[in-house]
Length: 127
Image 1 (cartoon, one colour):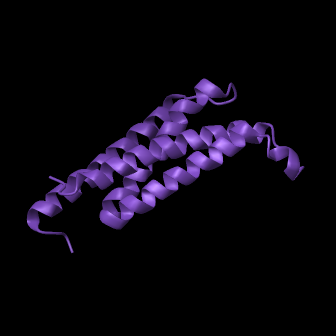
Image 2 (tube, rainbow, N blue to C red):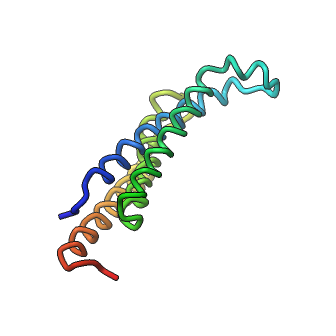
Image 3 (tube, rainbow, N blue to C red):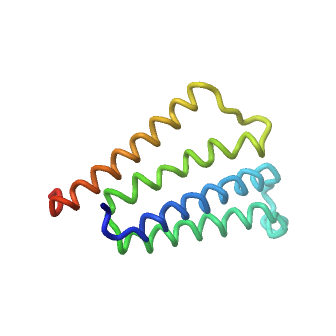
């Protein structure tokens, strides 16, 4: 079993926060223009930046206390959340069978990394 679970949980939460930020960034980008003063009122862009930054801070904290080789593959779940959420917010985005296969492959890969890390901790490390 993975000894220190809270960094894993923190990274999982950070993936959801950061991917929500990416949805807001896309929404803000749809209203983007090149007048920096007007962008101060682009609320979705501002919220997206703040959420993305918060997700990055949570990742950094988790990396300080956890195993990089376990945590960073979990962070790839960002792609999963964005793929699943974006069709609900943007009519140009969609999921098809190939994308669902990709989601499944990423989830299986992250699970394998987690299981490998759990078996390494039982053996006393894998270095």
